[in-house]
Amino acid sequence: MRLSGKSIIVTGSTTGIGRAIARRCLEEGARVMIHGLEADLGEATRRELDPEGDRSALLIADLTAPDAPRRLVEATVERFCRLDGLVNNAAMVASGRIEDTTPDFFDRLFAANVRAPFFLIQAALDHLERSRGSVLNIGSVNAYCGEPNLLPYSLSKGALMTLTRNLGDTLHRERGIRVNQINPGWILTENERRRKQEHGLPEDWPRLLGTFYAPSGRIFDPAEIAAAAVYFLSDEAGPISGSVLDIEQYPFIGRNPEKEIRSS
Image (cartoon, rainbow, N blue to C red):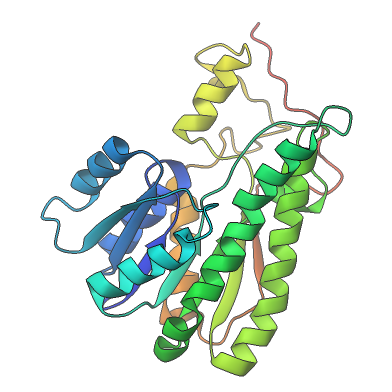
């Protein structure tokens, strides 16, 4: 049990990568604060992942609200008496190009993807220092450049990566808190499956991927990101801090055309 005795917050853990990370943390012996935006989905997720209900808690909150980061951290410590890990997974994923991005859209995206993780880390500092805990930010390979129609999103993930690099040094030296990041590539979450169908792709679009996007014949499963997350949250990671792990199956830099799949 690689996370036995640890208490971990996983934001955005009612779907996709976040849910996979929460599930794996529980399997590895951790107690987990589940977080999301929808109460019904949150309760269903908690019952699924922790049927006995003794190693999990749930907080429904919009993390862009000014007091939400503090409330999430305080609720976790009140429930589990300590905090050992913070996974900043919750994010707003939305399309936008230079021509059509409005100031309001830009600000909302940065509030969710940059400001919320920043102030969650700030709220957790004292607790993570006491436990010599760790922060894991979930970014994206789009942080390096991004596709044309993901410009504001890509900018936000680039800012998150700068936050990771900066705090990975500062907090490790000054407070003993490790800060690392995973940049996933293309992941087959339930939301991604639905988004592509809404964009006009056929229901079986994952089978139509060519070797350009999926040399292995498929894209990643959320559980594969969760496996990497456990390493960074565990004591096995030792002193590793300020590191960014890119999880992709091809050299993605300079290889970012828009993903278009057409059925034959």
